[in-house]
Structures are given as C-alpha cells and as structure tokens.
Length: 197
Image (cartoon, rainbow, N blue to C red):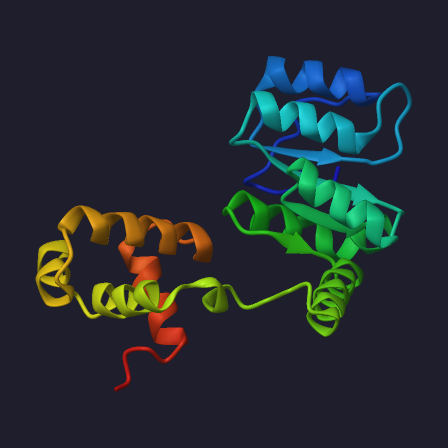
C-alpha cells in the first residue's frame, strides 16, 4: 500500500521465496527489487546473486531484520545496492528506494556503522592500505602529468620513453586506483593534493 501510494512507484509483482523471486525478476524486468534475506527454498542473498548475474542493471534493496555484519557484507558482495532493517521501513523505505534507483547505495545507520567499523578495523590492522602507496615512482610521476593535462606524447617526450609505455603505465595506475576515466584520475590527483605545486 505504501509503495503503490507513491506517484512514481508501482508494485509489479511479488514472490514467496528466492526461486520465485528469480523467475519473477526475469519475467517482469523491474527497475528495483525489494528483497528479504530469510526466505524458504533459496535465501535472499543467493537470489540476489543469481538475479544480478542475469540482470546487471536491476537495483536490489535488502529489507531485513538481520543487523549482523556478515549479512551486510554478503548482501553487498552479492550485488545489493542497499541494506536496511525492517524496523526502519516506515520512515526510510521510500527514501532508500529513490536513492538506489538513482544509482547510489543506501545503507541504514546500523549497516553504515558496520561497514565503517570494518574499514577502521582493517586500517588499524594494516589490511587497508592507501592505494597510492602501491604506485611506483614512475607511475606517480605519470599520474601527476596526466592530471595536469599532458598528452601521452608530451609525457613520453618529457620522460624520454615511448607513448606506448606511457599508456601501459596509465593503465596500471587506473587499475591500482580503481579509476575508470581521465576525469576520475584528475579528481583523485586533486584530492591527493598532487596538483598544488
């Protein structure tokens, strides 16, 4: 009722268990799926994994009573775009659906504290290292030059290497920093303060 009352939302189907959820997702091709974790036959995390394999564009919001960290991480690894507790559904659900429909992630405050807590724990134990520290000196040099707007040919001339070598270094930089475009690379360099001097 709450969803159908929204002018920009329409409930197109329902499923009783995980297997039916997969079948209905394929048949109906929804934009967003509201998924429970605890379901008979096949749980919501495995159903999410299988649905995302077939339909990469669908957004899935886990709506559950489980606040344990292992469920949050399993759901996100399976491809969920959001995670929220049922107890918060009456106040957060509509907002959460709008957020994930727009392509962003939504985590309830409980899930956020789990994710942040895990990250901070990995920082303390040294598991989480700044990706910048994995770059070689040459890669750092090229990152700075690319971010400053130099072309591959200009960089190659300046460093006395071939443009192909510059391109290879650039690919390694993008992979190590998990960046996908020149614009992201420039933003990263700005955040790191590489363009200040």
